Amino acid sequence: MKRTPLLFFLFLISIALIVNSCKKDNLSHIPGLLAGKWQIASIEVYNYVGDSKISTDVLDTTCTITQYFIFNSDNSCSYVNFQCNSDTTTGRWSLTANKLFLTSDMVCNDTTKSSGGTSKPFANAKIVTLGNYSLVLETGDVEPNYSATKKRRVMRYGFIRQKISSTQ
Image 1 (tube, rainbow, N blue to C red):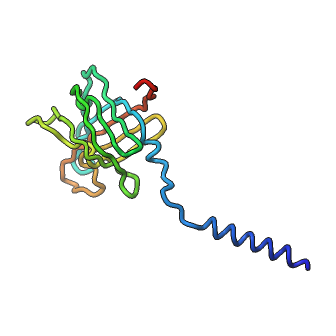
Image 2 (cartoon, rainbow, N blue to C red):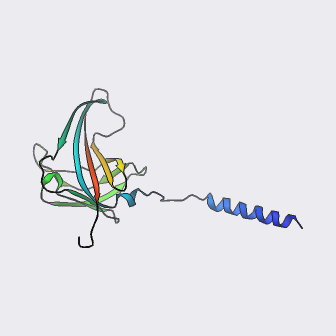
Image 3 (cartoon, rainbow, N blue to C red):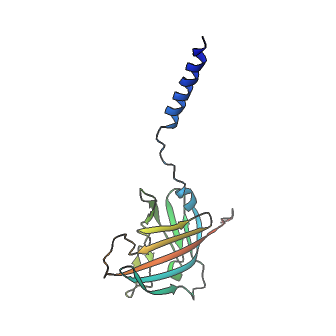
């Protein structure tokens, strides 16, 4: 008679363990953190040979128009005034399976190219920092394995989250 409550308790514990051990998919909070409007705060270019930094340049120091990168929850995105051009570029964004890289098919007008034209600046962007109020993306030669003698160029974009008012 006294074993019945003990068996019932062990049964409940085993059910709780089975339910709790089920694999849970899509637990990442990164897409939710990324969604929103981000204003550019800084653009720096790091030039390396191997892993030795040889120079740092700061871009857009004379730009007087505000640049925004906007991520929507439906995986669409837009960049307003890229490289200080008065235009808006749209595209799609996604995260890699490990959630460490942002990929975007957005094609922007790029005045930094010597021949002018366009570029896909965020085709493969490493997420360095992502929080409630700041986002740092690195693009360019961000592969983890590189030659010790190869020149590399990494562009680092720093963004600050902006509130989106109901009138925008």
